[in-house]
Image (cartoon, rainbow, N blue to C red):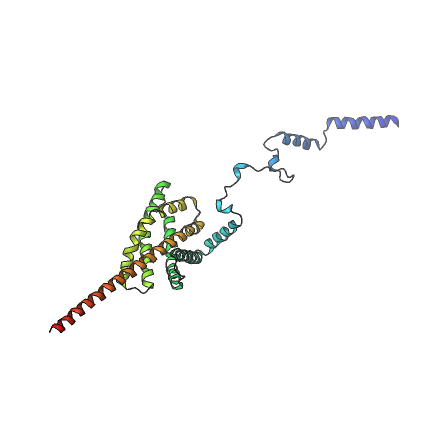
Length: 276
């Protein structure tokens, strides 16, 4: 019995020596995998153990208007509205810009608040908001050359030559027409204001247009130009009011000289009657 037990044990030992176990290939495979640097798990990719490390090169640059705290949410809401309803957004934005611009101009002039004048500004805004938006979309989609400098210079030049004279003529002409002036008076208002506004426009809008097309995303260009336009509309309203005052003074001088001439003619006629 003891001899039989010894023989069985020796056979089991010989089997283990000559026939590897079933788990041995898996152990070899595990060692090979861990030794291969290409298949080894990277510590920064293992987010389960909380040791993931961000790579600086993959961090996106955040625009400045998204770093303004609570104001960033307002810019984001405006951007979404601009993408979904561009015409409605432009229309409402233009009304706000013209309202603030005319209100500032009235305060600068020291006049009492004139609601009729404000209403004229809002009517002009309603008529120009959508064409202005369409024009700048045309500029954005055209004149795009291989040279960024050439593209930018062309956009600025075309805008100043084509858009600025037409818009300024529309603004001052409508201001005079809505005030009840006749066509000769409207033309006189345009001659008084448009050349001056054109000269001052060259001092501001080329730089604004170049900066907008270079650094501002398309959905935020209108609100960027809107902030600048508040000051510009203040200037245009001030210039229009100055022209109104000059025209009233000229009419008063013409009226007084005309009445003086009539009195002189009547005096001469009376003197001739007395002498006769």
